[in-house]
Length: 283
Image 1: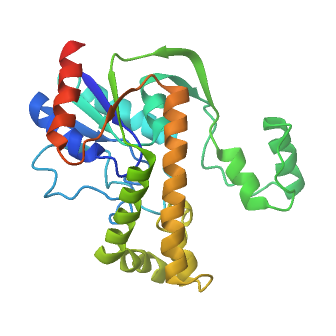
Image 2: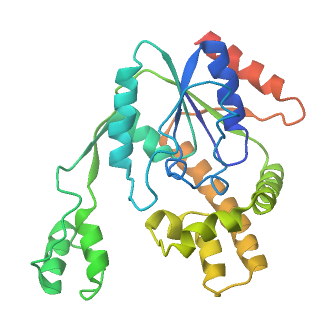
């Protein structure tokens, strides 16, 4: 059995996945694009080894922060996990919908080399290649780094909008005011737990990888450490960007996948667990 637990940040996905894993003797597979990176712990709300309670977790905390881990990488790794544990119950948990859909549906990527340096190409030649790949490409001819990154980006297409695996898709949700309150509280806890210090370790090593410069909770602290904004402004931005991301997550899942939504009962989470288990048993 393959279960998928999705939804926005701070809604209780990790807690639910642990309880379901205990009940169904399952392994848990991370489906959060930032939690794959080693050392990005506090800002991603990554589960700790103690919190795992001995339950096997896969595709979490295993990628160097300097590596640009893509949906193509995740698809390959996740399908290897599905094959490896084909006789076990598996629970995907996370909010990165594209990773999940690329794994479970018939997504196919181009076979282009994703690490070409294009050392022998002029900017004009790179620009022509970019236009050949996408006639609407708007990258400036002199922006060599972006052109190379664009050319190395693997194309993804859905051959058929059909599942490759049977799975049960469960989403956790709550009303907007409650969710935003939980997000704001989580950010405050991250700061108290040492988020600034976590980010500063990478900053002091002069690491400015894509994960650190685009990930919510990290890009804002980098801006603070660059003296572009105050710490208070950075914290406010993390909260704002997290709320906006939660809205985008809802929109994506509602448009892209057939999710069975359950309201998170924060006062009695056992009720949420029971509702989900009853639904699973009815399938």
